[in-house]
Amino acid sequence: MTDDKEPKPPSPEPPAPKAAAAPPPPAPPKADPLKDPVPSRAIDLLKDVLPDALLEVTYHAGQAMVRVPPERLMAVMGLLRDNGELRFDYLSNLTGMHWPKKERPLEVVYHLFSIARRRRLTVKIDLAEGESAPSVTGLWPTADWHEREVFDLFGIRFDGHPDLRRILMPDDWSGHPLRKEYPLEGNRGDHVQYRDVGTAEHVYRYEKAAIRGFGWKKEVEKTGTGKG
Image (cartoon, rainbow, N blue to C red):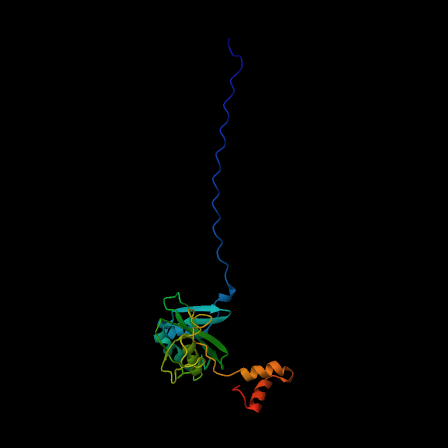
């Protein structure tokens, strides 16, 4: 007996899965307007006169910044101060930075201002551990206390400074508090109580109504008790 049913056609093959579309290329980073270059006569002159002293030139918020080798710092600073077109006659600030992961982890930052020309410039140098920076006290006397503060808080020494010693911490303080490895709570034994505050606490606690500003100090001086 024959089968009169027609054979079923084979099922169609399922469509092959489509290959995943390649991800679009990353969008280019947006330009940071804060880093746009600005005209700087100081940078132009340094490029002409001391091109070997420029390691890096950057800009931020309309201000120019230049990084120079420590051994070329005095030549750069002398030009910036004494050139008649520039006349950076005011060292407005000098500070330090500590970047432990960098090959040269210590940084000194100089903020210069020309009173006559109304111009600003930031100069930076990088130092290795134990490396000294030349003192600029001979160019700007105001660097005296600035360099002492950087020495005190970061441990950076300045060759040629007339009196390089601590200015904020006691002479026997261990370590430099603004270095990254310095513990936030300080080292054990750092904090020493140098004054007796018992009288001041007594006056504030029991005669609070009579205290105005530094009234407790006046009370200590009047009674002659305590050390203030």
